Length: 590
Image (cartoon, rainbow, N blue to C red; front, side):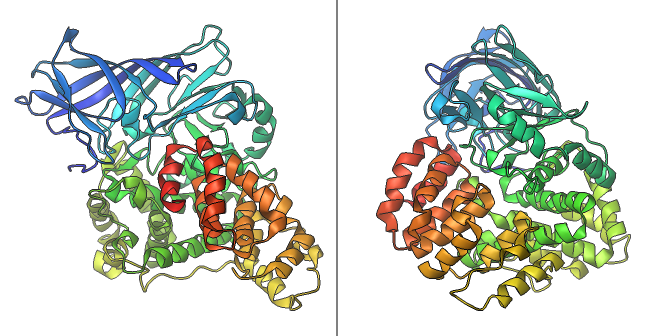
């Protein structure tokens, strides 16, 4: 199927393997070297290899060791410059000598001051959705699967890591590192990070990388990783990627996590100190099946990655923490889904699961719809057929499409053949079309409930005085999720006196839990609550996670502090943010 976000034509000539040979130049913020692409000729008459590039400086191109003609076409909005390379039907490989530029949006170069350790600069790449082309010339489509190997040369004293086998456990004396990924992955899953890093294993399968001064905290936080791997394998089959490690990146990382094979990239905002936010690790681990093993073929099918993964994440957490815990996650997710549908508009086509992202950056379609509406569709199917049959289907689904990129139609075919018909039902009876192809919230969506939230709701209802301090003894055992339920229940127009009472009772303005901070600072901005202002600014300047930044800036603009204050903060903070974040926020803070 054609990918509208890629110039590649793999039906003619497909890249099957790439070999990177790159040097890391921190002084000039450049990755420079070569990539060699192994080719498969699907159309023997094709004489042009089509690649995706963006903001790359191409120096030379060889076909089977000999110079060949090539050209960069005019820039296509959002996509970059298609690259055409002249080949013959006998060409086995193409070698490109190139370097990144300041416009290479996948790569974030951090100064020493922007890291936790403050002593060494740092870099990381973020390829999803279509940014890998800005640091590697490639066929940058999730429908193209490639194996890869890499040689990375950096300054001695730095550690390089990749989404591959061969990640080191100690710093190389000469700064040279070698990697290989023998399984075919989508290009957006090729990832690199270089900096002052250290490693500590939990066992022969799992471990954690972080800056040395963060490692103790990170290691204490992720102690359940092997339990998660075991629970995941018991649910849906073997983990095929070898090791599963987590790398805690500097705070500018724009996402909660990124499911790079073998090595999840994670935000430090999940280091809450009490393991209360590690469902994010369960989510990234689940991607090892849904996303990395079975991948959406185009970004219109993005929900196949995220809806399945949210479902799988909550099953992992249910296995580890129990049903009541997983129910809290589902209720919070439902709230996010309802809010997103209201914000976008219930009739807007972007509230469909299957998207039409022609002519736009696919990153613009990545919101809670794919995650939460996708989750609730799968939960709806489970409710119709029963968990036993549903789990058997999912195990077969991950096996049937292992290491393939599929469309929504492929999923529906499997659902019909492997679940509906054996159960004596039909896709129409399951009602899946309304979920996938129609906007808004389906009438068959069942609102989730969580017993542990009933106590939170009762506690809120019991507090009837706007002048009496809250009874803090009732909240001592609350998890982060219960606190989120509590804060989300507060009115956007609380007013300063009520905000003051909450802060005096619970100390929200001095919280170090990023999830709680983000909700509290949004309330503070909407209400013009001055005691939280300085900490809120610090949070925005030193946190790069888009999920937290966007609603906070929007609240500042909407509240009494206004657009001018938002622009002032953003002007100072923007250099700390990755392109993924600024691409969204530039449109918010105009």
